[in-house]
Length: 247
Picture 1 (spheres, rainbow, N blue to C red):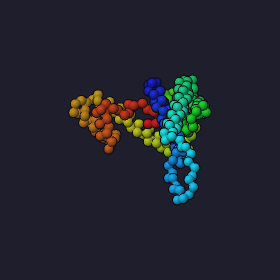
Picture 2: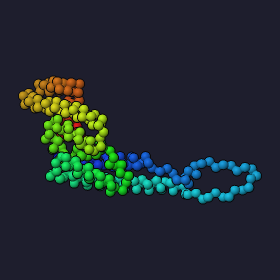
Picture 3: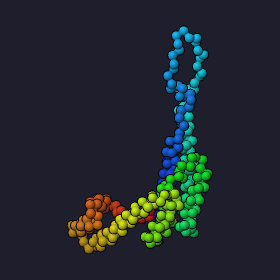
Picture 4: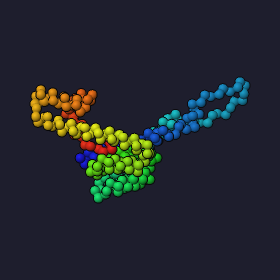
C-alpha cells in the first residue's frame, strides 16, 4: 500500500511538471530579428539608382533551430528540478506520522511554497490547485485520517483542504456535490459486494450466475452489463482502495 501511495504521489508530481512545460512553451520567445528579416521579401532597387551597399551578413540558417533546441533543453532541466523539489517536499510531509491532518496540510503548503521559491523555472508547476490537491490527497497518511472521520466531518475537511490549496468557493461547492455522488456510489457498491458474497456462499453453477445477474441489475440497472464484463475479467471496482476526494 505504501509503495502504491508513493507511486501515485510521483505520478501526480510528474503531471505538475508537464503542466509547467506546457505553460512555458506558450511563452516561448519567437525567432530573433535576423530570422525575421530573412523571411521578409527583398525590395527591388529602382532602375538606374546608385548601387546600394552590400547587406549586412545574416546569421547562419541553423542558428534559430539551435537556439530553440537550447531553450527546450533549459526548460526540461528546469521542469525536472521543479518536479524533484516538489517530490522531495511531499515525501517528507507524507512520511511524518506525528502530524495531524491540519498540521500536515500546513506543512504541505509550506513545502510547496519553499519548492516554488527554490525552483529555477517559471514556477507554473505550483500554481494549479487541482494538481496540488491531487498530490496531497494521494498521501496514505491523509487518507487514513479522512477515512476515520464521519461523512459530514470528512466533507468539511475536504472543503477546507481545497480552500487552503487555492480552490475558489464555486469550485469547492461543485466538488462537494461530486463527493456526494461518489459516496453514494461507493455505499451502493459495498452493499452489492456484501450481498454478492452471500449469494456465492449459497449457490453454484447456473443458479449462481442467474442470481448474480439479477443482483447486478438490482444494484446497477443499465450499468449491470459493464459490471458483469469487469467481473468476468477479474476486476472488482469496489475492491479498489478508496481515495477520498479522488474516487
